[in-house]
Length: 115
Length: 110
Image (cartoon, rainbow over all chains, first blue to last red; front, side):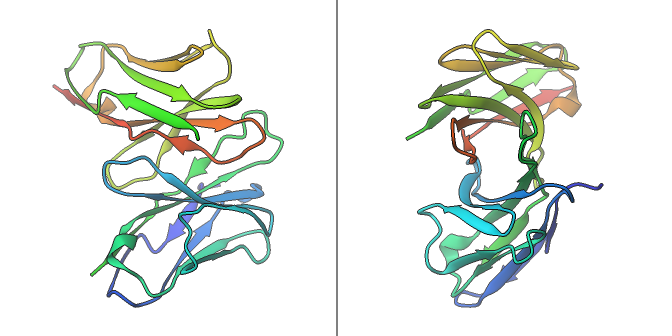
């Protein structure tokens, strides 16, 4: 297994446009997380899935943000009507429920720049 | 609300000059404390998980320790390839998300 993958790696968009990011977790992992990281800060939690169910959403996730995990495998994060403040690195992580340490393994991230 | 504070913000070391990074935390019911390494433009890479005060874990030149209020990451005889941002995160009982500190950026000069 090659780990968590994310696409695209970079996205430049104009304010007001919609963007969608994809995350493919480690194949047997049933938990999937989205985080956002701005320059000089640690990642901040956005939302979490167990299988296909979205179990928790942060207050950071405004109504312009939506995340899905339709078949409990890959996940998408969509941002509608992007704003300059959405510019950040969007990180996906996955973990295996029941594993002792339940370590979250991160993907390489999608860097978003909103002009 | 969970709080994780890392110090210093930046650390410049000469190759071979050992040092320690600090992570102080406030969390109700600690489930685990995690250390990650992050290279520029990449996602965090898992290093260690610590669960209880007194626990220690080692990996190559890195050693992580945990007390009831803080964790230390000791870098022994660092090499330039140890240059990275080191992130500390906590997870509370009955929760799954990680709460991260802002990180310590370590630069090791040859």
